[in-house]
Amino acid sequence: MKVVIVEDHLMFREVLRKVCSRDLRHEVVGEAADGLTAVDLVIRTFPDLVLLDLHLPNLDGFGVVEALRHAVPLVKILVLSSHCDDYTVFRAEKARVQGFVDKNTNTVASLKEAITTVAQGRTFFSETFLRIKAERHSNTASFDKLLTDRERGILILIGEPLNDMEVAARLGITIDTAQKHRFNILRKLGLQSTAELMRYARTHGFTLSASQDGSGALLP
Image 1 (cartoon, rainbow, N blue to C red):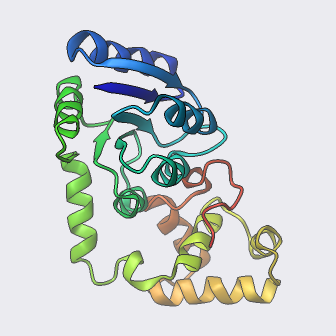
Image 2 (tube, rainbow, N blue to C red; image 1 turned 45 degrees about the horizontal axis):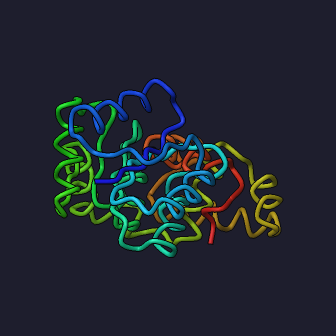
């Protein structure tokens, strides 16, 4: 197996390299610490598997996935993330990655199992990921059933938090339109105040850290 490691923390990158090359006998053909470098590296080396952190400089992990799905659609992608909240799980589902390892709850043994499983053409998702996914799917009032793509994007900005004027400036819309979006999101989620909405955004993973740099790239 040829593997590319995409991780901005040097220490964890070294752990991944040792697990892949020493323990599992795979060939690490490249490493990247930011999203744009990762895309170029994967296109050049054409690995079998990409180990991908989500929160990266320049282009976040989901942006990397989207780029690779167009350029090298057959490459397998195993996500490794310390963020395993509702919105991250939702986005990972939509991205159709082959696996998800939760850095907070999975062990090195689980990491090895995940790499081996995905390398064999199967999928591996952490117990935390599967639990959060199941809870959201069974919840008739979950954000993915109530909010549009546009409203989910705006909720990211509200969770930063940005006020209506700042949201309007970021999106190039009027303040009245920004206020109308906020009111509709509150109504749909059954919340009573902007403070409650901000807490909801943070609790469920809707913050600007969900988009790589707050550029609004997630917003349709």
